[in-house]
Length: 117
Length: 113
Image (cartoon, rainbow over all chains, first blue to last red; front, side, top):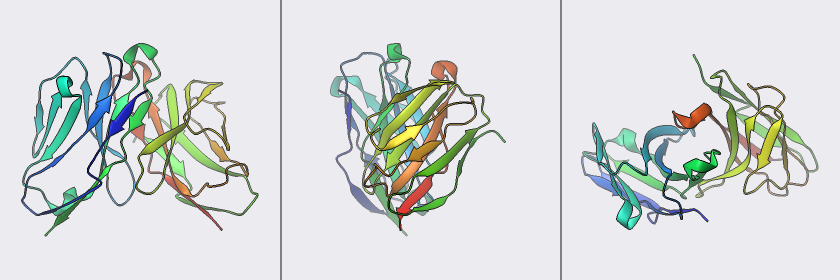
């Protein structure tokens, strides 16, 4: 069975601090996607990144960076110089194996990030 | 603009009543999904459909029903058998081959009167 664990339920940081959100996943398959989504207070899910299990290169997009380590089944997300607008719930998600073709997602329970001005 | 429209944004259900949540997409996506979100919880899959006139149960399908008569539409009915329907419901769609990630609607918040 697939599982995604986001051990940090809530995090509070002061504006301009860096913060890392942890994600650990479990799967028996070798081909899958990993995702991060942001859910602001308004409720919609905003896509941030998708990673193919074959691509372990770290990625940076502006103040956001992601560290994918297959050896430890982790896909951590770092926000540099956090801003109040970053306050949201962040979800990590794991897809079904790509051979299955259903692309169902298993979500973690989310980490609520509060950035204090 | 292409996207997913969920309606209504807020919905109230009386005891013993069935209610239907609407999800329409104009992205020409083949697959559509319904998720339920409870406070402090991640999203859990209720039903999904990969093609018109076909759908599959997800992890928590009991008390829900769906139909997929048109590619653009995937309505979810919350039946009276669902004893704890208060939640935030999100609809998503996905294009063929999953070259893009799942695209989500803005959600419907369902409450019991």
